Image (cartoon, rainbow, N blue to C red; front, side, top):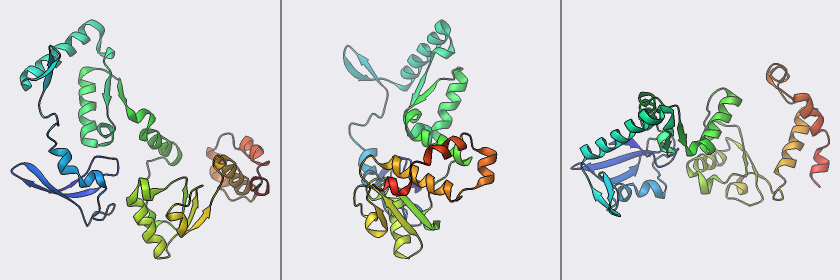
Length: 257
């Protein structure tokens, strides 16, 4: 079965093998553009995860301090009666729904939550995304107008700033290694550590805690040399003159000290 892994936001392609309704084997999908047949330790252990003996597979209810199995009908009736009571006594807005990360990022899971939220009448949806990946999505929307995803194989220059994808996002690391090996991309790594990719490009081995100073020096050069889209700044930027004044003191010569 062609599918995708949703144990993280990457959504790598997988070939899932099923026998008698039970997952028995998982392989990376060779033709998938992201993982290209590879899987991380999470993906490699999907079978163990799905078939774990202690995984909760049916409704449980705590009775006299112990968890007891109950029927689906009893579980649904219990939940429905409590939700109805809450709504009658305190109003629909008194209910808040909490989702894990994948229940927000996965379209199918998220659609069920939104439908339930709307049917019940509450606007309150809470998730770890409020202070995790969703902030990144919102920043992209506000900056670029839409959510963007990296495509290292189409890039001409890549800057890895405090980012070691060989340890955290190996799929992207593979793509970057491929692009560098083929001479398709110029790589700049800004990191106190000598990461694997730092060895393959220009490595700016800054002192820990000096990232902001380097960023301000870069802005100094970009603005002083007019290396920015002036029309875009005039039409859309707020506070640019204040920024221009602020970065004047952060010359490359000063920051390199």
